[in-house]
Amino acid sequence: MIPASVQIVRLSEALPGDLSALQEEAAAEGYRFVEGVLEEWDAGRYAGTDERSALFAAYRNGALAAVGAVTPDPYDPAPDLLRIRHVYVRPGCRREGVGRVLAGALIQQGLALAPRLSLNAADAGAAAFWEAMGFRPDSGGTRRSHLLAR
Image (tube, rainbow, N blue to C red; front, side, top):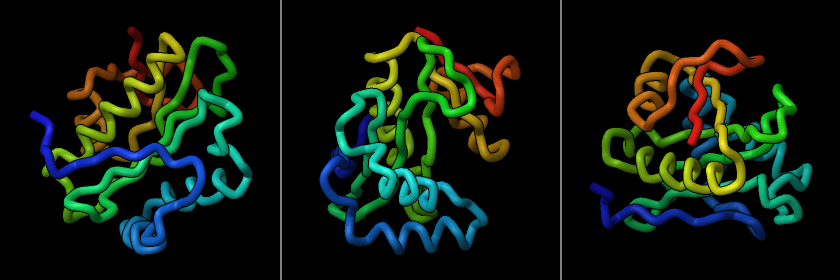
């Protein structure tokens, strides 16, 4: 069931003003996911020139709750592969459906453009989440833990 209070927005012109708060929360947990988003944003990756690179924000009740991206896999140049990256859900929004809705949007975007998606789960909890979303453990690629094929 998709929570009605979650909205997904593709970001291409501006980053959310409260992204710095999300970055601080991620850093406090030891994650650099949001820093990676900022670095790639500054490099122009999500400017809309390459449809295979998309950055999404999830809002719950109008407040920024999560971010995530799908891009060409920087560790595996296979043309039939995209990678889900930089996914971070605020702690207060976990187990509320936000991550599931964001992951669904990332998977839909990615599989519309490539038959395979990869990712590297940060920990056992993330691995279980992505496996529940249909990904299978995979050690066949460089720096990936999971793979999903349509």
